[in-house]
Length: 121
Image 1: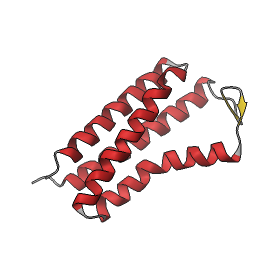
Image 2 (image 1 turned 180 degrees about the vertical axis):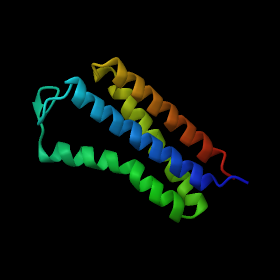
Image 3 (image 1 turned 45 degrees about the vertical axis):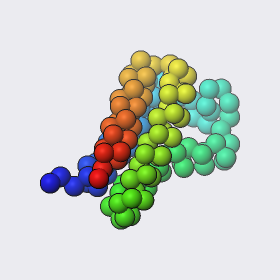
Image 4 (image 1 turned 90 degrees about the vertical axis):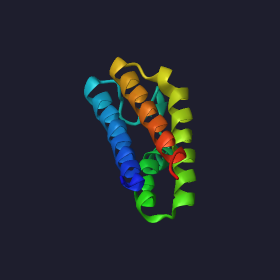
């Protein structure tokens, strides 16, 4: 029988890599100005929020492999649902078609995560 914990951890790793790929491509495409987000100077608070958001998939990998079944099941659903809503709200703000594509792929991974966690018996 397949171990759902490993599958979910792998999905979180893939999601994190999708986010990082988007960031790297944004830099190379010139869609990124250092120290600014959409013309607004970045603050320490904004950077901290970005760090926390990017830590979600990393933390979920560790928790997938360490927490007990009922607890981690619901954490997967809540975390993937939060990231889905967060990304769907911001998809229009990305200028590049590659960015929108990667966000949509990330949304699909969020749905797959929720599906696996929901069906985890």
